[in-house]
Length: 249
Image 1: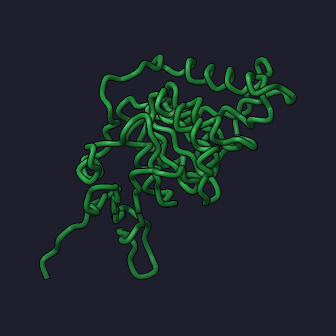
Image 2: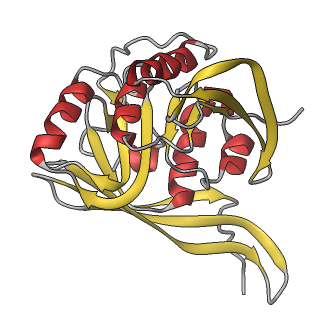
């Protein structure tokens, strides 16, 4: 049986057409795309996204914890001991880091939204996580922040991907207010909210499993730096797949 990621569809195509679901391959993963009817309102967009969250296996409830726990190497770098709920964090455009984070959270029952990133490695998420816990909106339309804030009402983590640039304070104020009233941490990859207190830099620096012109990647290391206001920069390494083996020479 193939893995499936639930897609909420294009935000400009709002009302779901009954009994219309098309299975198609996406990055070696079966992705279910729900077709919709164009011409709805913003209210229809909100209703559609909330319906997608309610359709997930576990009804979303506000968690007691103020942070979303990730993997230990990252939690140890974050000043809050995890991803803080009710706010946004800036993140570098490192697809492998984000995919590993989503896989880890979803495998442990966390619910994640992905907005505006159709080329993210859902194959890795399917292999290491639980894609039934993932809501993907590949094309959020002209207002991706609206989509992200709606998902933030009931999920644990929302990843928003888009062009780099900082929102104006006037534009950011209602978004920040909605995030404070929500449940999720929003990981912003590209767009930036003014006053974002924490930023995560991540880049792959080591690949394993490749010989001299042969082999395949079996593992990699991601260098991570966390910058947070009022704290010293924290650095660490996250290992994905096979770990480095020490051999006698």
